[in-house]
Structure formats: structure tokens, C-alpha cells
Amino acid sequence: MTVQVEIKDQRDQIPQPEMEIGEIGKRKKEMEETEEGEEGMKVKGEEEFVCDENSPRGVFEIPIVGTDSDQSESSSGGGGDVEGTLSVPEKALLPAALLQEVGGIPWKAMIGCIKKKSVWRFSTIPLLAASYEISRKNFKRKLARIRSADEGITSDDIPFCKPSWRNYGFSELSAATNNFSPENLLGKGGQAEVYKGCLSDGKIVAVKRLMKKEKENEERTADFLSELGIIAHINHPNAARLLGFGIESGLYLVLEFIPHGSFASALFGAESLEWNIRFKVALGVAEGLNYLHCECPRRIIHRDIKASNILLAENYEPLISDFGLAKWLPENWAHHVVFPIEGTFGYLAPEYFMHGIVDEKTDVFAFGVLLLELITGRRAVDSSRQSLVIWAKPLLDNNSFKELTDPKLGDDYDQTEMRRTMLAASMCINHSSSMRPHMNRVVQLLKGEDGPLDQLKHKSMDGDRSFLLEACDLEDYTNNTSYLNDLSRHRELVLE
Ligand SMILES: Nc1ncnc2c1ncn2[C@@H]1O[C@H](COP(=O)(O)OP(=O)(O)OP(=O)(O)O)[C@@H](O)[C@H]1O
Image (cartoon, rainbow, N blue to C red; front, top):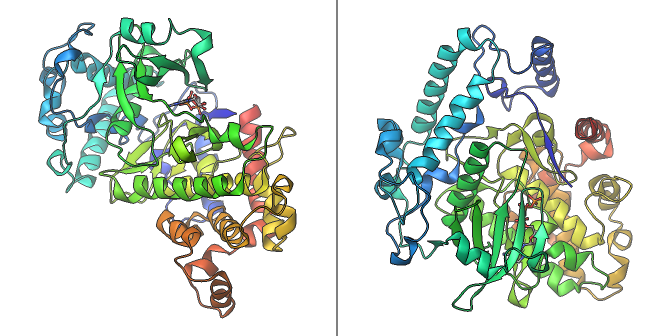
């Protein structure tokens, strides 16, 4: 179940790490009271409204350097150079090649759409006449701040290599998917339908058609560019690969076809999924996330890690897919606050669903829930809407190894791997984001590079404030109230 909870943007109310939770709640309440009776966000005194468009998105980072001669077929107008649509500082952010028409793609029109969208969003704010100019100024100031935050990362720093992806015409995609026949439908999510296709050269692909009907055209375009911009510069064996895109008669991503479907269908299918595959998925996803967070040219937060967004390639190698919600963060941003809060109930970290705070630890939490799913064979949220985290936490605390383990596995699993996976899960789902480990530590733990398990335990019991001990601070869950309260508040919001 993908949820989208609209909360008003309170970027300037971003709770600072040192701020007490109570204080955050108080400020949030103040904001809510201020907004009562208003249709949207009220610009009050020094309060600034900043729309999400100025948050870093992958769109401006598309590493386009050349054109493929076979790409000229698809152009729906708006080509030409994009310089006219961009301010000088904006141009400075763009790779030079993006300032020209590339491959018949109307970048000018598309980027123009995003710029228009920002204005459109502002124009929905009450007190428009009085606040528009102030908001615009603030918006520009924020933009400048982002750029200075981004200093040190220029487009020159991003290694450009000639991309292999290309622009597919609608006729080509339609022919490949048998006119988007229901028989070719591989899966359907909240944002898109994905079809299996066979290109004229015989290559089997997955064609993702963006759907989100309730969104305005411009908003859909921005989402599409964001996903495209992010996925285009990801290059890791545990992340889905982009082959191309289409912008005629809709918005399409053309992806490598992944033969074994989603991990969710394998794990929750009729047959028991063997432990070797489960563990391979755990390790592969951990490595993929570590790449996104630390190793790829940009620091990327996926924001929607879940079993149905992990695809299984040949040999059941897991691939992280669906970058529809992903964001990149400048290096020197501790975190980012987003609205609306989007993601999947059951996988959302408390600080994210309560306050919209996004950073690497948002993904770490969701990864912990994924680990719990593969350990237990239970879903993040079951049919009676019970949270797996809340069910599993006391069992993890009490080392109830047997009760946690999926009964379908019987005794067919590696005990050490299972224990490491349980330890990793319990660390990742820590209520406090600062106590959750970074993904590189999780990789080490799963691989057994931190030493034998009994030594790790011994280290913790010695009072060594190692990351393990910190991460195993279970107080929030043993008292349970904090997370339960947050969760039930979140559930109310979702069901409202
Ligand atoms: N490259 C691919 N190869 C094979 N199947 C795929 C591929 N990409 C997606 N699918 C299938 O399509 C389903 C939906 O894809 P995806 O998660 O990208 O859509 P979405 O609308 O963005 O989903 P969500 O609701 O999670 O946002 C996946 O769960 C999977 O079953």
C-alpha cells in the first residue's frame, strides 16, 4: 500500500537535531493552529514558504553528452536550446550539453514545465498578492542557499560518459508491448504500469508508463524528469538499469527486463523461498543502498525501499528499482524535509512519517523492515494492519530466534547468517535515526567482516559504546509508547 500524506510544508520549521521532540510537536501545533481555516499555507510574518521544487532533484544532473543518430524520430516540439528558459545561476548548474537540444528531446519545454510548476505551486498559496513577491524572493534566496550548499560539486565534477540510453518513439514502444496489451503487464504500482516489451532488435525490455492521473501534467513531468535524472547516473550491479525513455504520447522509462519479478512475489508466494536467496537479497540490497548513499556521484536517498521494489535478476541477484520518490542531497545537508510524505506504510521511519525528515537513515529503517520480512516471511503490514516492526521488536529483544524465523524455512538456513541478519534488522529499525548504522556497517555486519557474532555480543556487554551497542538501544521500543503513538498517529493520517 503506497500512501501519500499531505502535510503543509514547514521547511523553516525543520526540527533541528538538538530540538526536543516535545518542542517539535509544539511548533508543529503552532503551525497547525496558524493554518486553521486556510486553504493552504499561510505566509506569516517572517515565515517563509518554500516549495519542494527547490529541493535537490536528479533532473538537473542528467549526464547527457551526445546524441544518438537514431533518436531523431521522436520530437514533440519545444526543442532548441534551453538557455532562454534558465537564469544565469541555473545555467551554471547544468551540464553544458543540456543547454542544447539533445537527441530531439525537448528539454527546453520539459525544464520550462518544471519552472512553470514552481510558479503554479506558489500561485495556489492564499494571500497571493501580498506574499507572492516575498515568496519569490525567499524562493530565490533558498535556491541560492542550495547552490552555495552545493558548492564544491559542479557539473564538471560529475564524470560524464557517453550514455547508452536513448529516446524511444511511441510507435516503437507500442509495437514492442503489443499496444500495451494487458497480457504484457508485468506489474502495476501507485505511479506506473510496467509492460514487458520486445524491441525490433529482439531485446526484451520493461516499459514503465507513468500514470499518476490525479497529478497535473507539469507535476508528472517533473516526477518523470526526477526519476530519469536519478536513474540515469546510477551504475551498480544491485540497481535497475535504464535503457532509455519515451516522451511521446505519455512518459515512459525503458528498463532492462528483470526475469524473476519482484522479491515480494518470490517471498510471499505459495512456495517457500530458500534462505540462500533471501540472504543474497539482504546483502545485495545493502550493497546497492551503500552505493546510493555513499559511492555514486550523488548522495541518493531512495525513500521507497520495500520488497516489491526489489527485482530479482538472473541468479536471483537483487536490483533496487523504482526511483520515483528518490531524492539527492548535497553533501553538507544533514537531512532534508519533504512534503508530501510519500512512501509505503509499514516501512516508514518514525522521523519521516511524523516530520518529513529524509536522509540515509530513512532508507536504513526501511531496509531493516525488509530484513524482518525475509527473516519472518511476514509482510511489513499484515492483513489486519499490524506492523511487523511492533510484532518483531520484543522478540528481537528477547533473542526469540525460533519464533522470529519463518516456519516455512524449517531448519534449512545458515544459523550464523540468520543471527547476523536479525542483529542487522534490530539495529536498522532503531527508533532513533542517529542510532541506526550506516549501510557500509550493515554490509560489514552481514558479511561477517566485524568478527564472529559472539565477539560482537561480548563487545557490547563489555560496555564498549561501539556502534553495535548504540544501535541496539532498544528503549524506545521496549517502552513501546513512543513508536506506537507515532505509528497510530500516522495510521490516522493515512486513513483520514
Ligand atoms: N525492469 C523490470 N522488469 C520486470 N518487472 C518490472 C520491472 N520494473 C518493474 N517491474 C514490475 O512492475 C511493478 C511496478 O513497478 P514500479 O514499482 O516501478 O511501479 P510504481 O508505480 O512506481 O510502484 P510504487 O507503487 O511502488 O510506486 C514491480 O513491482 C514489478 O513487479
